Length: 308
Ligand SMILES: Cc1ncc(COP(=O)(O)O)c(C=O)c1O
Image 1 (spheres, rainbow, N blue to C red):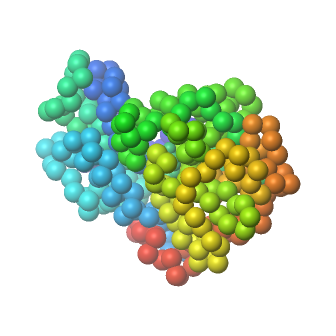
Image 2 (image 1 turned 90 degrees about the horizontal axis):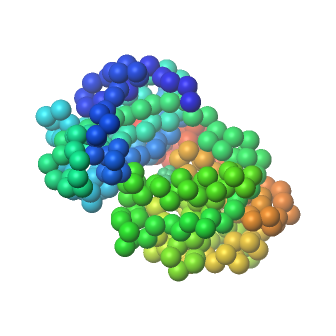
């Protein structure tokens, strides 16, 4: 990863190399943080943050579940302040396409009690490019992970809590070790949930199916966007249970996520999906999504927050 110039830390833009926390920061030891991943697109009207309001809302909701006060360096941050800070961080850096705010317990503490531990927020902006490399556009290979998607009894499955990502990291390692690009994670009853950092969609028998919010998924902002775009394009989209059999026998499979955007899948556990080529449905949805994100469709203008 190439470093950029500034990181927003507790209300100040500090040099990348000066954005530091103590080794005893509670979040480092116990995973007590909440983060977001947000795309920034270059549009004809300048850089725009994609669905900033939704990302700020999800971050705030996750922090609420964690019991955080949202007080950084003496100032309490609300929804508008968070959005302003994200835009400030994007504006301070050149050529960035991804912003990662993280609210975390930065106080030095040994012991699990999070009550009263000081909080910080860091907003890092980077140039990410294609998260899955060529596989993200040419067709990704997936495995089904032996690690399950953590459910709501293990923690808030709908929030992007740092500690909950251990399962995703283990699954990702498993995929890479087996020569795949990504891993599908099943939920605790064996239904398809999602990938390590992406939601999943299938196209079968003329319908688009995606695991519903009851399946212990992270309710992706890209997922929500793609459901709307697909319906606007005339496809039927059903949020439901998805089985491994349906996944393996689908005509098309694709993943959606802020980092991966819309990424077609051509192989799962060694089985070829459809005819092994990128399908027409995901192609058309991806094309429309790119047009929207790059500010070329006025109908979806409200999804973009311009930085300047
Ligand atoms: C586990 C998981 N699922 C799905 C997604 C996709 O969500 P979004 O489209 O909001 O990036 C992400 C990415 O944040 C994720 O971490």
